[in-house]
Image 1 (cartoon, rainbow, N blue to C red):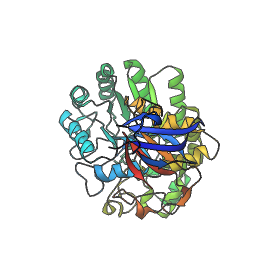
Image 2 (image 1 turned 30 degrees about the vertical axis):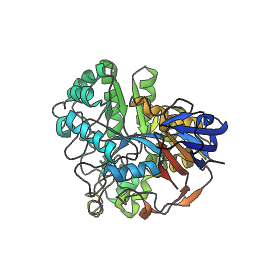
Image 3 (image 1 turned 90 degrees about the vertical axis):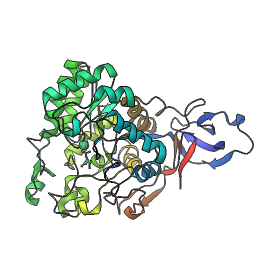
Image 4 (image 1 turned 180 degrees about the vertical axis):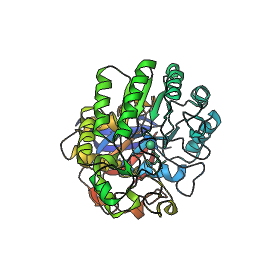
Length: 422
Ligand code: NCD
Ligand code: ZN
């Protein structure tokens, strides 16, 4: 790997200068050899590489929908240098061996770091605990989740939290009470849902689970993370729990920051997602919560699906939408360009804090001499209409296709290697 000289970049704090990269680390540009490759970053912003706590890479098992190679290529195009790969693959990542295998696929095929998430329950069945200790000790797993399914049994949740505490691991919950929002639920319970005649998914199915869980997390003294928070009531619960000192963190997706229930009015299954797109009051609440830190991080919930799994009536199509490539664009549009958030806060929500939650010590670090060379070069002014067909992902369930959005990512560098350049 040759040396790299990045010239004229501006950092999130407003300072401008040249950056040297040698053997995966930022160095003083004066220490580079004369044959260093050059990357002109005049007028561009250099941010630490983004970290995604919630990515579905589908490998092993559904390589027709996505692979580690294609998913991480999409991640690099979106400015990400690390993604946490969710456990709902086939087979499920519920043993140390299967977690080690996902990490191996990442090292072999990845255009960014791939960190395996371990399942909480065996086979995601919600009945007995998976090999939590073995995954933590032998595969370095720090985030455990049955995502796609809710850990519904309070006793299983209690045992998982108790078990994970000594490992300093975090339990990431897909909060959806299956008794209140069952398998058919697919549209936010609201007036529009009644008109459309789709099975309802009430917001309380999320907030009631988070309320129970934060009490259990407090009781067990363990770390708890709420995935894809989508409702105003969930935000209220989180605010209360944080004030009480519970070790709770939360994420919001780009789609829940930008899109509303109305999108499903045409029954386009691209917009079918779990939890469902919500109404204005909820969207406003999660935006405010991300700005004030009640919601700690943005996570994509990149959920690629093969077309044949989306080509069904709305209530039976698979839920999920992709998001790695447009995540930064959406957060810029909704949070930065609207004046809700500054660049240093965006860096916290999309890089430093997700790395901290996942205990990834070499990601989410500042851009400074001696630090790992993970960065994304951003053009803050470029805009473009999103072309869903141009995605690096195998999947085409892109909810942003045809929308005009910022087009920020110019180049991504992961561990000193250029993983994307426009
Ligand atoms: C995700 C998937 O497809 O795996 N789907 C979704 O609608 N979000 C699972 C999940 O993140 O809950
Ligand atoms: Zn989920």
